[in-house]
Amino acid sequence: MHSIASYFKPDASGADPKQASFIPSLKLNDGHDIPMLAYGLGTKASKTKTTKSDDIINPTVAAIKAGYFHLDGAESYGNEEELGAAIKKSGVARERLFVTTKTSCREGVTIEEAFSASLAKLKLDYVDLYLIHSPFWAKSPQDLQRAWAEMEAIKESGRAKSIGVSNYLQEHLETTLQTARVPPAVNQIEYHPYLQHGDLVDFCRKNEIAVEAYAPLTAVTKATGGPVEPIYQVLARKYGVSEGEIALRWCLDQGIIAITTSSNELRLQTYMRNIPAFKLTPKEVDDIAKAGQGKHFRGFWGAQFSDDDRR
Ligand SMILES: NC(=O)c1ccc[n+]([C@@H]2O[C@H](COP(=O)([O-])OP(=O)(O)OC[C@H]3O[C@@H](n4cnc5c(N)ncnc54)[C@H](O)[C@@H]3O)[C@@H](O)[C@H]2O)c1
Ligand SMILES: OCCc1c[nH]c2ccccc12
Image 1 (cartoon, rainbow, N blue to C red):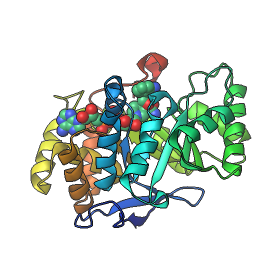
Image 2 (tube, rainbow, N blue to C red):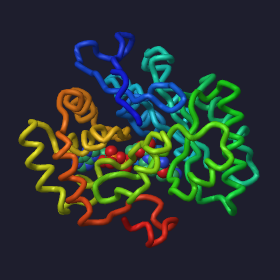
Image 3 (spheres, rainbow, N blue to C red):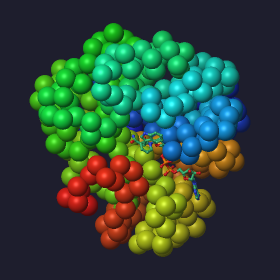
């Protein structure tokens, strides 16, 4: 089982030392620590790409300075150069950061080639976590097993400290585990009260695969008016925080890493200050989970999942 092993404290090299930013970390199955709150460069951040690269770099620098030392990027977001530039501009020591990127497993490009290109864009000599972005490109179980063997070779080279997957269902994980020498450290999935994925999270826990939640704010952003809303409202009043902070804490209090994003610096700073300062009770976590069963919502990769996944 995972435990919240240590507390991640930004140092004074870039983050504001006045901020009480103690974001918990989780111990991965390979022994590395992962900060449980991350800043994502997909979705909103990549949409602004069409204007200027500064529109990606500056909010990312602000996020790092606010204490978001876990940064979630991807080859397909098209902004690894900006992520690398923001890391440099932040002045925070590389070893204090936890940098993730992902491979799209494009046809005709080896994962090694994609990874080398990502490192070059990031101007880094290693990433903390490298993920297969999704299993949907694979035409056979063997495709997934071969891709995982390529990921293992990258980990062995030391240029990715941890390796994992994203958007994998239990069947994809089982296929991968059949031939894996190193199990995935992480499965990054859309996760919020309206998409709890049946037994998938328990399967990950049993196999010591950490779960990362993307789109954790869905119930207060894209799927408002649902059954968890009154509970979020009561708990937000009780703890003196926003409903978004209840949504993020709901992940953390289940041992699930939350990846959020915003270009609103004040909102990011407030999250960083408030999230470590309160905790939901097990009953509150359970109440949200139970209420969430009353609605289904998926914001990403919809066409790739069958109706069987409506759990
Ligand atoms: N692996 C994948 O396939 C995958 C898919 C989606 C996202 N991701 C990663 O996860 C990150 C976060 O995903 P997300 O953007 O869906 O997460 P999220 O649920 O945190 O939503 C963030 C969005 O909500 C808005 N927001 C924040 N607080 C709000 C509030 N109180 N009211 C209204 N709007 C508010 C933000 O401006 C932003 O656009 C991405 O940047 C990316 O790095 C990965
Ligand atoms: O990971 C978020 C979903 C996603 C996959 N590829 C992308 C490219 C740009 C923005 C989001 C995505």
